[in-house]
Image 1: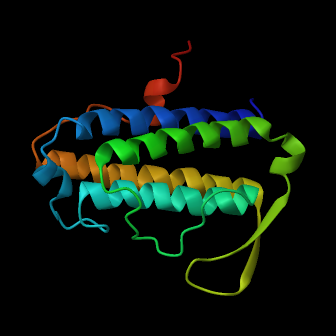
Image 2: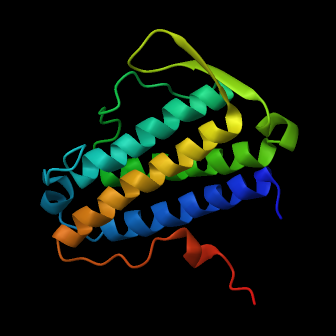
Length: 168
């Protein structure tokens, strides 16, 4: 059985791969379809993709003490898809580098942080916080695939299992 580091390294690679698939598909949309309010939590594909980057910045700041730490989860940090994609790709590289830097001992440690919405400090074990981090990404990418479905576009499988090698 692989250690926790290998587990999270697989999630980091999956995150990068799944994001690339969604951004490739989004690049084929008209600007109107990309920005249309379709009733998602963050209204549009543009709003949802911005939220994913925002939340990743917030969590990566909690994990590392570095990088942006936005104060609004619905902030639009990049108004164009190319700008947003460049920031997403940079953040995905940062996530992989961070996970690669972890040891099993660090994974068994804790983090402390303040939420965007409340002033009190929280202390949590790092490993479950990382599980939440990657699960949150998957949750909102699922919303993006629904937005594509509303447009009649199938982006194909974005499931983690697609990246797991087939073993006898």
